[in-house]
Image (cartoon, rainbow, N blue to C red; front, side, top):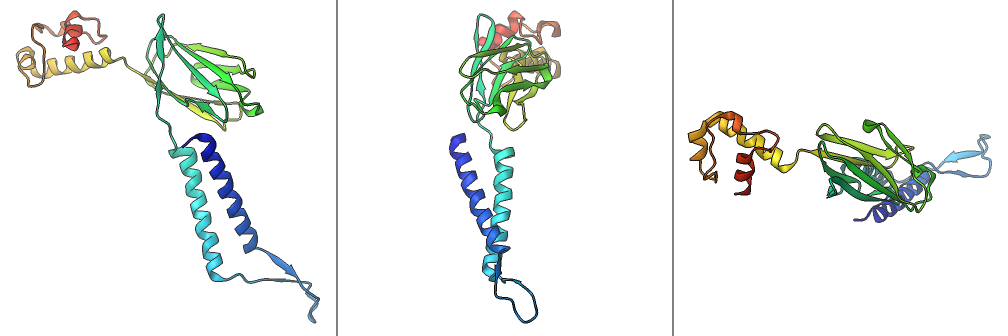
Length: 225
């Protein structure tokens, strides 16, 4: 479901609940009774009260899902010339709003703002100490190099629209760590003969041959197999 459609459903639902709530608390002006009271509360039917209560609970659940549980699939940045690049459209939020990049490699985010809302005039990346103005209909580049794996948020100037950057270890680094741990736990002979380990021709005479940064020829040969 697109962000615009979800926002439309959310607004319509909110309007319906507000209308029901006004009916719950409505008062009617009646001719002045002998007691001197000018207004009298109209008692609403029990089914209507129950409906309003259930509607309020549903509204709370919808808000929680909207702000906490509605996550789009992360999109990986593409590497060009040694730099991880991705374009982010700023229109009613950020698209994509979840991005994956590799650690210790330069990142270039290209924001293209199409929404005239003042809330989206600025994008803030607090963990990378970036606060950048986004001119309308003009690409704006934000560059940084993440040094530690993790999830780093970014948001608009009013913190109403948010996104996240997922910084991960590259595949060869993660696989190198796995192979090192297997080597240390089983020993060279056990690793070479373990079911599912296609490491034919790879020598593991010492643990120093297993490089955690993925640069070892043994690791690369194992991963290529």
